[in-house]
Length: 371
Image (tube, rainbow, N blue to C red; front, side):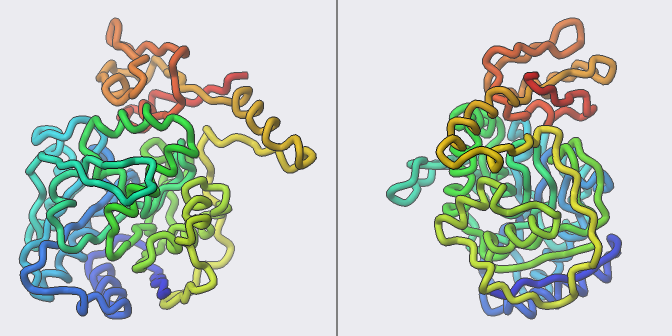
């Protein structure tokens, strides 16, 4: 499995385009294409954030991929995403504008169609169907363009996690509520990825995010662009670059258990990984794992007990809250309300998904341990 690694110190249009051209040549992407294909570009546009925040895929990555496709005769290139919040024209126009996606318009269209369809899954999946936005269903070829980030719930956000944005609008919190446990939620993400099946994944790690990702963290200048046809092995590889143990990321462990990750087949091509990288700061929601200190027969009950004891909850920082209601809108358990222009949380019923923290534009929601 070819793993393309290019060192790009900053977002400079010509250099990024040149590296995209090299990556696609090495992966022989041109052989996949036909002139009448509908090609979908799926960036991470989780919310309306400027590119320098490192929360979203940089527009120069998206425009460079679209430009390469245009240069190779593909005329039907669509950029589509269902960000956090409602899947509506008004909301998406703002997201496109703030995230800088209009930079790609000479080579691609921005999706402004808001339908979705139910898609059946293979036999044996926990989820028998997924509702997917129509551009995903109608695409002949999907290029996944995630942003490399830590994540408050899943620990890591890359190729697999980016595909959660194919679920329409506020149906995403519904899936959080249906699968509040990290094992079940991660399995849902894995099953979703196997339904969407992008043909190619290009990870924007030039300026990544560490800490309280996917939106409340801080930029990390990693300077790497990664590209591969094997999204699962690439995610494992990218997590290790960040200083994370891939097998501590539940969705990656599950992918490994399903035979989807093959580190022994990884063939790095391009630039070497920079030496002396400082491990990414982990989210505040990360729990210490004491189970290795406990005898084997006690590890499962001990871990279950510690999950209850160390469970994290959202905590409002009132001085930062502007009462916009984005947290309440995104809360799958409906435990948040806005009173006197401030958010009010109920601890009872909270599933600790941290959708509220994820969607807060003011970074007004912190993490509080149960003890």
